[in-house]
Amino acid sequence: MSFPQIKLPARPLSLKRGVISVPAAYYFSIPVLLVITVVLLVAEGPGVLRDYQISRDPLEIESGDINGSCKTRKAIFTNCEAELSYDHGGVSYKKDVEVMFVDFHTGDYETGLVISAKNPELATISLGLDMLWNRIITLGVFVALLGFGCFALLLTLIRTLRARLRLRHPAPLTVIPVALTAVAEKRSRLFVTYADTVREGKTKRQSFTYLERGRIPVVVGHTGKHDVALAVWHDETPLPVLLDDQLERIDLSEQERAEALASLEPVLANRGQEGVSAPGAAVTKAPSLARRLAMFVAIVAFIVVATLGYWLWYVTSAPSQFNSPGMDLNNMMPAALNEWGCARLQERFADGPAPFGCAGNDFRSWK
Image (cartoon, rainbow, N blue to C red; front, side, top):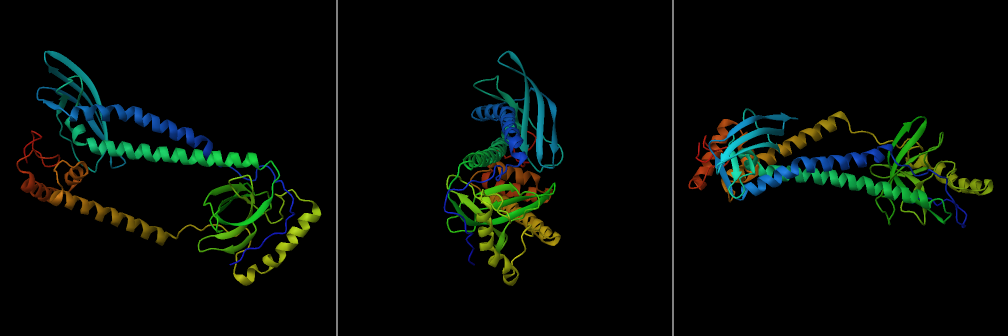
């Protein structure tokens, strides 16, 4: 499909201010995500580091006291808080411990008091050590996701502000096609999200704009998923500018605007013959309820199959019984499957201590 070229003057042209917008959410989302990331690191990082140090030389205290509880939120996020009291080397210690991890466990947890043999001031609950890799992975995933989201929003914001700054200077304009990925009406104006994904030299960057009241995009075609509209590329900016149907966003004389609109008339007149939707009709439709339900079922089925597959690998083939995700999965299995899994693990690791989910009351022997 060929895209039309609007007859624009060869001289440098200016564009109106505000033709590239920034969603208001970007301004407050970045500091919010940053604060959440810092709070998460400050709240969980020291505890994970402490338990990692203890895990290198653990010593279980049989006579210690543990007073605390665990709470599960959103079905899988478990947070345990405990007050520890113990004596070691003639010195009494009191410590507050908090542990957060992801688990599908139901019912109560059993745990003991463990300290570092080299540094008895470092104390935790054995549950925290059993879930150490679970906690490290959970913290790492959350920090990575929050950090990536903050970086992506900041990068988009900087790119947009830089583009708006450079658009103030006249420059040659090149007409390019862009994909309209979303169109929504807000306060009698169209808020359009579009992406440079159609032309050969595409950047795949996404942009946002509010079209002036009464104006609509110049839709000239259709890709497999989205309508295609015309935009102009300002030589000094990293983002294209979406055009409106009257080309009012470009600083033109009346005669120049009339000539430019005349060059578009044949294309717009043939839209109906080519099956292209009318300007302004390029609104992305949400998937049907049946399709969304099918996607949900497929995702759930994939998670279930992947979970069972990993559990089977753990109990039958894992090189060690102390595989944190495997222990968690085996522990959350129904009693019959848990017993079968523990029997398979005991067949291979009977000479070693039992892992979490297969251990008896002493946290070492096989149940």
